[in-house]
Image (cartoon, rainbow over all chains, first blue to last red; front, side, top):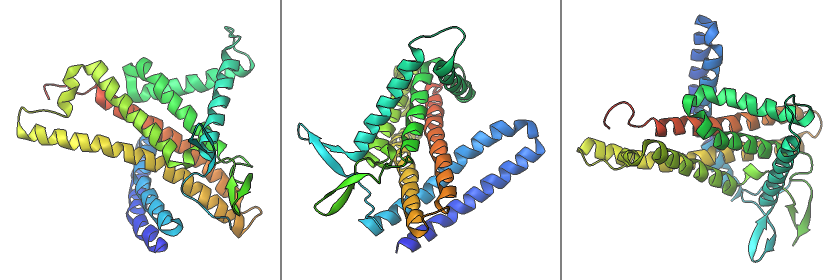
Length: 66
Length: 243
C-alpha cells in the first residue's frame, strides 16, 4: 500500500519537475544573463511540484507507521 | 531497525505541560541563535572582525537576496523573513548532527531519543506556518488599510463575492501546505537517513547526508521566499485599480 501511494503520487510531480527544469534550461540557454532570476524562480516552482510528492510520501509513511 | 514515530516523543513535563524531544531541540536552536546574535553584536566595530563579519555576511546576503523578491517593502518585511530563514536552516541542520535521534533512554522497553530535529515535528512547522499567514494578513491590513478586507469580503458583485470565498480557502490551505511541505521534507529525510544507515552503515549514507544538507537549505529558502512572495501579493493588493 505504501509503495503504491508513493508510486502513484510521484508520477505527476516527476513529470512537472522534468518540464520545469527543461524549460528553465532552455531559458538559460537562450538568455544566459537571466540565469540567477530563472534559477530562483525555478527552485520555487520545483518546491511547489515536489510538495505534492512529499504529501504522498507523508501519506505513505502514515499508512506504514501509524 | 528502530521504530520510526511520526509524532515527537514525550521526554518529561513542566507544570503538567508535556515537553517533547523536538521542543527541547527547538529551545537549543533558539539558545544557539540568541547566543550567536549577542556574541556578534556585543562589541560592534565599523570594520567588522571575527564573528561580527560572519553575521554581517549572512544578514547582508539575505538582505540583498530578499530585496530582489519584495522590492521597496524590504525594510518592513526583512526581520520576519530573515528570522524564518535563519531559524529553519539552523533547525534543519541541527537535526543532522550526530547524537540527535540516536542518544536517548529506554522507557517501558521502548527507545526514546532525547533530541529530535525541531522541524521534523508537525507542531513546529504548523506554528511557523500560522505565524507566516497571520503576518501576511497583518502586513496586508497595515499597508493597504481597511480596504484589504475587500480581498475576502466583497459584496459589490457576485463574482467578487465568490472570489473572496476562494481567497479565504486559499489562505487556509497555505497553512497546511507550508506546514506539510517543511515537515514532510525534513521527516522524510530523517527516515531516509535511518533506512540507509541500517541498510549499509558505511560510506553509503554519505551522499544522502549531503542531499539532506541541501534539502535543509532549500526548504528554509522556499519557506522564507514563499512568505516574502505572499507578503508582496498582500501589500500590493488593490494598487492597480478598484478590486
